[in-house]
Image (tube, rainbow, N blue to C red; front, top):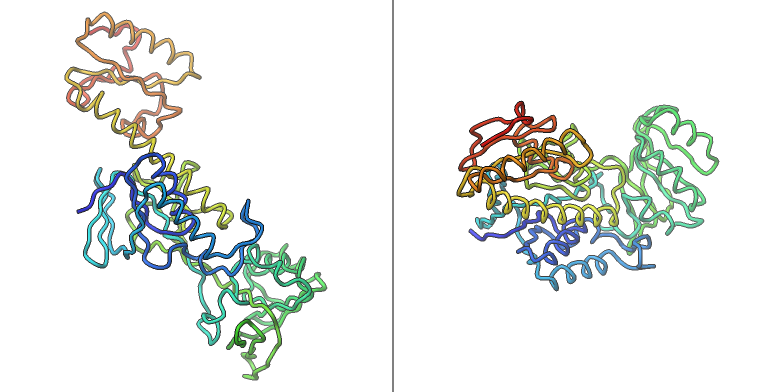
Length: 397
């Protein structure tokens, strides 16, 4: 089993950014990626909204990120993860090749995939007129005609957004006339937009084109008639699927399968972080994925440092230790801490003191079920032997 300080599952922009920050912090870092390095971003034909790059391609930007991570020492390993065990301090990952990897800190950045129509031409022309992201690609269709497939919130809101660029936006809707699945406000806004045209009771059956999209075939579900329509772009919004199947019952997921994580990218499991499109979030873009990865890696590093410090000064201490929970923003805890410091000093070295600022180390407070401060406990060999919280005013050892 290969052991690392930090293991990153997923080599998209989130995973690569995490690799840069992890390796630069001198953590032994590995990124596990089953496919092309860069993930979904690798399939993007052109990127014009990544800060500092006026125009680049998905493959070029992802290669730059990968090279950057490798220059700092991160390993990029082409492996498909089959199983992951996050239940112990040392997390383990098993791959399809039968290899095992272990680390105390793990960043989950598996990404997500757009739900496909699975019709002729869709996969072949993906990135060449077939898109799943208006924010990424709408400006390529200035004064052109595009087709939108879908009628949920994302589809209708993105249709309105694309009208800033396209001359006409044709929305293909599976329902009867006037019925859409999006919220009422978005629907009314779209119905009033002169650039948007709706095709009802219909589905897309084919996307045509050689090097790029040139047209589509639309099928009317009531009559069965097929209609050819010329268009330069097809935006498909029938849902996204987070690549989190392996994480069920391993970390908290929402109802759609996205990973629940806070602003520090912490998941429900100590030492496990989430980043990128598989995380519950508002905006899924290359720049936000990279931001997630950086935040996750920085906090993973802090977690490892804090765990090492805790082991050295509490769990492996050669004498009893007082664990004191306080906050510099709380007057009562400041006063209680002063009394604890005096009591420990009067013990003539028989007892040690470790102070925990819960505003910075909430995980440690949760570990010891501390919900109110001031709080303190006496530990020996890492085990709590006495709760001091109720006697902080007259503590002695």
